[in-house]
Amino acid sequence: MMENERYPGDLAVSADDFANCSWKAVLDQTSREGYSAMWQAFSAAARAAMDEGRKEHGKVLWLLADACSMMLVPTSQNEPFKPIAVFHDRRSVIPDDLSDSDIAFFCMIVDAVDDDWLRARLADLCWLKQKPKVVAHALTAIDAYRTIPLDTETWVRGGRECWERAVSLARMLKAGAGDRLQQLEAAILAAFDAAVRLDGFLGLWLADLLKTNGMARERRTDVAKCLESLARDFDSEGDLHRAREYFSAASDWYRDSADETKAAEMTMSVAEGWVKEAIARTSSTAPSHMVASSFYENAIQTYRTVPRAERAAYRVDERIAELRTHLNDSGEKALYEMGVISTPGVDISELVENARKAVSGKSPVDALKAFANLHRGARVDELRKSALDRMREFPLQSLFAATVMSRDGRVIAKRPAMSLSGELTDSDEIAIRAEMVRDYGILVSIVVQGDIWPALETMLLEHRLREADFVGLARQSPIVPKGREGLFGKALFHGYERDFVSALHLLIPQIEHMVRFHLKQAGAKTTNLDKNGIENENGLSTLMDLPEAKTVLGEDLAFELKTLFCDAFGPNLRNELAHGLIDEDACHSPIAIYAWWFALRLVFNTWWNAACKDDGVVEEEEANG
Image (cartoon, rainbow, N blue to C red; front, side, top):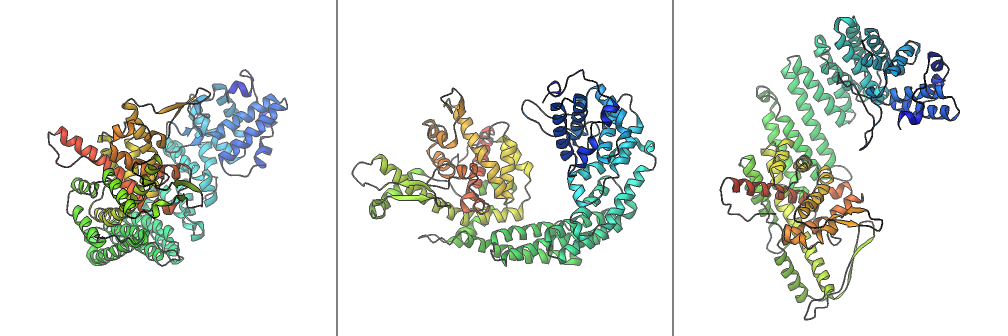
């Protein structure tokens, strides 16, 4: 809302208006949940005052609401206050929106404010905006900020930013702050020393505040010991997540105090925390060896960070070998969680071994090339011929119509009966496609269990690829639209980390955009005009039904895109995700893993083929995608 819509632009307010606007009553009636709650309370009171004709009081309350609405970013000295909300055509208030008279008003009333949160905010704005600067305002802000309690609830509701800002201001003023920086350090240390297990992450947060600001340097060992003690408390209570975080912080503090032996011990405790989670996951009422294998992998990677000088004393290499055995065992059992598949002429164990060998012992690029080409992708002609032959050889099942239901019992598709007459009808084509999709699903499961998953496990053991590597790959791939390389790269990296929940939620919308982009480039019309004359972009299902789809993408790629993402006979991932129907388990299903790998194959192979072309090399392999 613009200022002139809230109160007259030339309306002047005074200290008396502030004293009589009932600001204290507004705060007294507010549950103290930080500046956001204060902003909402002052805004409501301001509207009420304006409705009652108390315009001066209304403006005062609006100014207080504006001051409290800003988001504090203590790491920035130049712009410590950001808008709490940003829209395409407007945003909430920032300090530069306040006029000189507004700042002068804050400077006039700040000493009369006895609420620590409000006093700190107004003094900080005065220090930031008044010219010339008045050091007393910065000192007032520091003193008000440091009265805010150092407890868990206050910390998560804005206390952290307040204390960080107090430290930042004290460091900025240097000698001008007197001994305030030392007092802040002493207060944080006292709160840290008093932290107990019931405070949750508070001890960790306080230690991080000290470390970030170079404090407690003379007490680094003491801080490390305290963090270790809390970590062991959490570990004994079975709170493995908090225990790992505290052990990790303790390792950093021990390393800073030059105690490499204790730092290595803490790192190994982090690793063993992952092992405990893996064991707990496999022995729970709903065991998951797939999740357990990722925990074992985390343990192995953590052990690898132990310095070589410390490994022999703690038998680190032997422990890594033991964990690899557990990892392989969980990986094999994870295959059965996806479902036991038996097909004539297919030996899954042989596929697994061949997949591992295909990517093992190679450079990162060659390993990725082998990984992206473990499977050639669907061949529509072969799928169609196989489906038709089987339907004609075993016609009984095809003579009956079939209904496809979702996991929650809804009818989402119907397959008509096959006429099996001389000439195929439109209904027959629907039945044939449904059978092709079914066969494709079986193929995908075999590929994931026999090729993709075991090869991915091997790659994770041998190569530490980063998000930046995948972003760079996407940036150089001609199939990825410009400006989307970051999102594609993040999605591919999440999948490589086996976080398929994040991977799918990032990836699927980008695949839809990719298809739309290339169809537009080819001149296809990708929008529709509704009855009100509003032009809307078509969804992926409609895009894949355009005649240009097969021309631009190729028949095989178009089939996989439609089958994976927007065919009711298939997994329908795009629509399932868009409507919030896909759950966490489904995000780790073979079809979801294949969808991620399918995207990686597209991005890598288009990059590889373009790179080979640029180098004048004729690639022998058929381009995938």
